[in-house]
Length: 366
Image 1 (cartoon, one colour):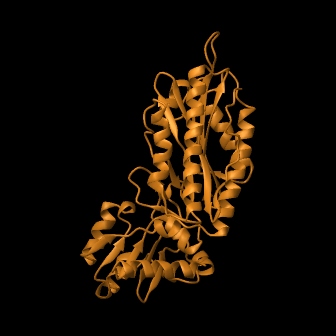
Image 2 (cartoon, rainbow, N blue to C red):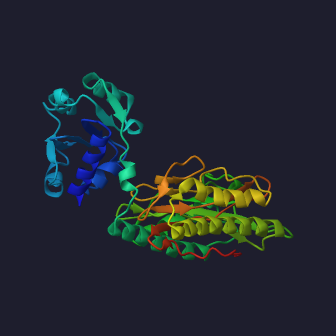
């Protein structure tokens, strides 16, 4: 499997008229090797692949493990008298044009690379990762199942006096108790905080005053299972929601359904499913009801990272294909009333979308 991924990578960079590529991001190294021990915070490895060579570069802390687990790449152990720069210099004459992950390199790294390779170009590995294998989909699905259990659990924990941080902590503890990890720090937003799409979970306290409409509680969280991520958003009400709150909720839910129906309908017709038009189907429904347009894209791919290809946005040029896993997450955000977002993950199969998150999306008041 991993050798085939290297072959696919080589085909891609040759098609782009590159002589070699230097892969630096941990997610892409994991994708190409299956090795998961490298830290995302430190530069502990690279993959350097040309027409006739393929190296994994790391240091003595990892060489024994890499020798056992990464048999399809040649190990270059840096440290002591050997450096990554030495290897780059060795292949300088063979590489006239080098592909690099421009968005994953420091200025210092880029200076070293440019010293040896004057002609560089951004190389995107993520498109190779957009079509998931059955094994990858299975891992994402398992992450989603743990997420569904976490949502069911946290609903029973909601009570007056708790802070956003306390509820987020409960979510994290539950996910870890199931042998998984969080795929990103959970977003828990009360009341007006929910009108900020990526609110930073804080000390706000949950309460309902007498005569006041229900307080919005928005959860956006994900699970990481065997390196693959889930992502889900649910909006519930602490107390009975008012008419306006109900209308916002139902509009968001219907917008999600509009996008789903568009994708399934176009797929059934045999035409190309355009990501931008899926976004438009949801966006147009929301604006038709008098609300402002969604301030973010409708959805994103997911896998080893929470945000991957494809992007379901107004400017997206991507075609949604069988094997892609992505979110559909419309939202309405009103500073005076709060925000509602409903997010689910789907895999696009031959017969249409199959939903991977199964927490109830009906209006819930607790």
